[in-house]
Length: 526
Image 1: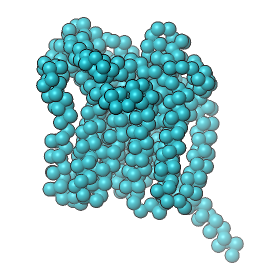
Image 2: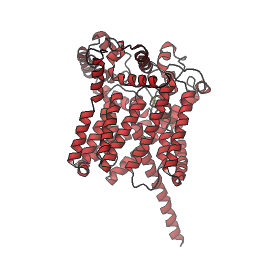
Image 3: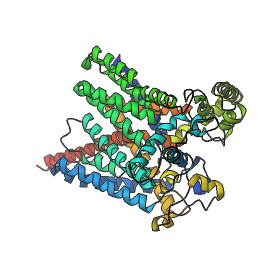
Image 4: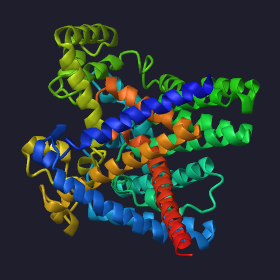
């Protein structure tokens, strides 16, 4: 029965990955604020450019893989630190070449952290305040406040912390891969190099928010959970429970990782025994809400708030309401949902919940089945095939000069111009070129993921089921939720792992075919 469930999960993910691949030959998902504004775009595919980039990236990938194979002769203690050091250097260069200033939510959390640190100002929790509406972002404010209290209070400090977390994520990608492939005879440095040079993660260190730290914590939690399922040592599940709890504290999608880990534990109940599985589930249940409970208790005890911060926070129905929008395919709805909560409900959670439910019901009843299916298709395709996690906005940035005041607010600007910011100004060939490369690379990753999933299904090997569960959880969640391709950033480590597995499977199969042909020719000649 358990094998049947796992097989079904693989089949479902194969369906979605196949949908992403097939759609990409006809439609290109794109996000480029300079050209389109803050809007998700689905354009007709430029097949010639697309195919040329596919060929070019495949050739480059094979060459890089060959280079990584040559590293097998060196010990991990030498190669791993060296690769991480190179990645660190690249990211430091990026944050000094692209001196991206924080904007909108990013700027808000930095400002609030400084107000709390230097002025003791917690008025943001009052009605109409930012943390009154979004108390879940207090974790990010608290984190930034701690950094600025301990280290020099400038943007570089926070960006350097991002780089450290990004390097930990890179290491976790490698460790998860090795944990899932214990019989591999190689050191598999290729996956480490891929993760260390993955362009979206290199640029995302420029983004001051919760994405990078949450991704590190949740990826690390998954690593320790996988290690527990293989080695059965209780300390690993304790680490996993603590890390997934902290990850969820920074980004509430940690619950997806939690559910994936718990379900995976039950898939391994024969190996672990029911006592360890039940103990693990209880441990997750006890720890999971401790950060939010502690936060509320401390804020109330110190008189900074009078009631729980979630009492009148924006309800989840606000983002569900944004997620049902035929005009924007579930993207930002130009403050329509914000106005329901702020203006119509007067920042009252209970009242706004009822208003959002009515709005959702009205949208579902007035839209035809075909319209809804078209919207959900566009949501899925744009979110998962855009491929850049919107680094054009969050990592590269822009001086804001091309779009007026609104552009300046969204895109922000730079602390100072550099040669790189000049090269990437406006819709330059460098900006559009990197977006094309990342889009195509994302497509190729899905291609190799599909190969791996089909191969695993045929071999009845479900070692990667925990990764599959997380990805499916994100797919399902963002069918309903408001969309940004940045929101799926926490699954990029899993996509790297699965795609590298598929790439290696393909490479080794091709090598084997060449060997078989050569041996067959030798026999005929003899």
